[in-house]
Length: 508
Image 1 (spheres, rainbow, N blue to C red):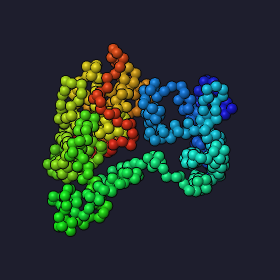
Image 2: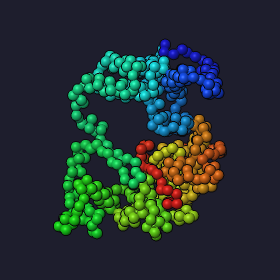
Image 3: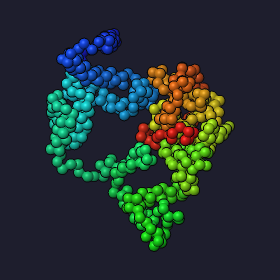
Image 4: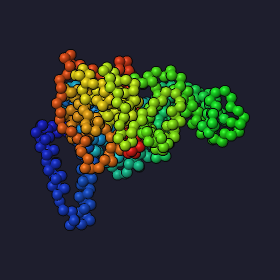
């Protein structure tokens, strides 16, 4: 068998012994050790650090057979790991992936099956390869063409592991790439399915200068569509922001053409902006979480009057105040203005369960995105949630008692054992995790409002909270979702809209 069977008591005792051994090593005085002794100790610790993940993989794989993420109060296993251990979702995904490949697999009957990557798992358990080696091998095997049969796949893995024992990750990666090339020198045959799989458009993070890098893999159809649009709107003299009255339809004058000194790339950028404005002005894009599709920007009255400072969009984009003023003349845009000194905002109160469009605008401006700690979904992808008390429990549809939450997080609130939300004295939403996920982590989400982290350390503690009473569900056992009926639920994508807020005193 792959591992020796141990009882529950044996496992707990072994982990306690390992913890005690670490405390013993940590208490040692290393100042008197010579070079040989230091190197020997470091070598042993390095080997142990390579071996420890193999135990974590087995325990994590077993946990997934014992319970479900929903039973622990989470949407999925990534959230369980990210919330309980305060790691990123990408790191949680890496650990789950490696556990699925390197831990023994349960079988319906009989002993456990060996890991998917058996040779890699054995080498890791013996401390012969590092975490970098494991990642290189895992990604290389994933690239194997579908026509490669099982025997060749196994031999490919064994060859990589054997070379990883005596070489660094780069050498193993180079060997993998060379072997993959020799196995399929012609590369994959282009087909519709492959093109559909590779298509995508990605916006990078906003830089310090406010610019954003755009990367796209376009299908032939998408390229043909944009070719015609850019040929029209990116022609010399068209959509030129330097013109007092830019030409967006018809034919530009000869003077507009002669005075157009933009490069082709700049003209195409301005054409894309024009297409977006035309789409917004058409008023045919429907609604987004109860609001017409529009650009929502928050700023302060003082910045507007001085024409200095910045605003922040509902997706987290920092916009110079001059652009904010100019955008106010276009399409369906909303500007939420706060007082810089007091931070006071318009308060709107409702006696209905559904938040009004004006209330949604103020919540977008206040919260910036989903308020659950660690969630990166921006305001445009979030719903309105009754933070203090659900509507069915007598909650009020007031701005100061509501918050933003993405669809999955909104549905995760269950005061009878799941997540619980409440407002602190600063009108910031605190999320109390279920018992299985509560390790004393932050209660508020600072992802969309990093300016909160600049508070002096002597401010009242707002990032942690004690357990609070969890009311019983409604009589029918169901929780009423705070989203409007028929509103599409956003995909829980950590790469969704969202981003930094402006510096303190620039926007409320």
